[in-house]
Amino acid sequence: MGKVKQIKPHIRTMLNHISFRMLYGRIVKEHQYLSSLHYNLRVVGWDDFTIFPDGFAANASLLYLLFKILQKIKPSGILELGSGQSTKFTTRYVQENERSEITILEDSEEWYEKTKPDIFTSKRSRYICSPLEQTKFGKRTCLWYSTKILVEEDKTYDLILVDGPFGTRRYSRIGIANYIPKIIDKKNFILVLDDAARIGEQDTIKAIKKIFRKKSITYIEFHVYGSKKQTCLVSPNFSLLGTN
Image 1 (tube, rainbow, N blue to C red):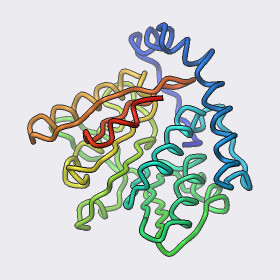
Image 2 (cartoon, helix red, strand yellow):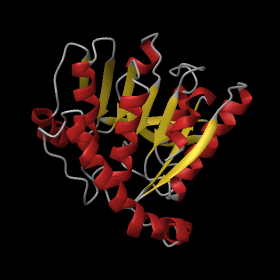
Image 3 (cartoon, rainbow, N blue to C red):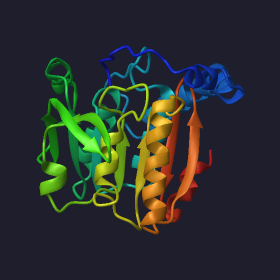
Image 4 (tube, rainbow, N blue to C red):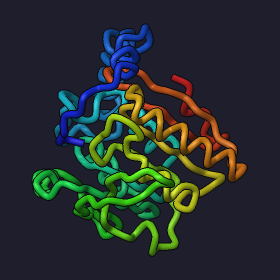
């Protein structure tokens, strides 16, 4: 996701970012992920487009994780919330894999117009500009994409990347929990949540895990540490993704 609305960080978020795992991820692992990513992009012929894993964009650990999922798991249905550097990977994958399709939701019209020329197009890719509107998750009010496609369509996704909309101090991006587990393939799913060192994202992850337990959906949880942290909730058959 390329645009950022600044929010006052929670004290626990600040402490999380100076934990040993985050510091090791930032100093050591991020460089390793970036080197491996560049090597593997050349191997599969994806070195013909630019990527910029810096600033507030998708960082190297997220892009490496995403590349690994696309190449090893080969998902058939992808939902990407928020767009940017990662969208180059997901749309290139869909363009090359006829049995796959993707839906991308972006709330910023300005960012949508900037990103649109850089992504790969195909008949199986939908890039939707969907401004935010107020919605409810339980008793909580949050902002979520205004499109109704996740409700109206009888569609499931085996890969969901949650990197939008913009983060909030608590229960960040909680709107996705309204659609879990309806939109996942319960026996074959990968749910990736970016910015997972933030307390707001951790609130949302806890809420989703509570839903999984209530619905008796078995999952494996693992984390990836680079300059940012990603948390993954996956069906047991995809546990291999948690190994480096």
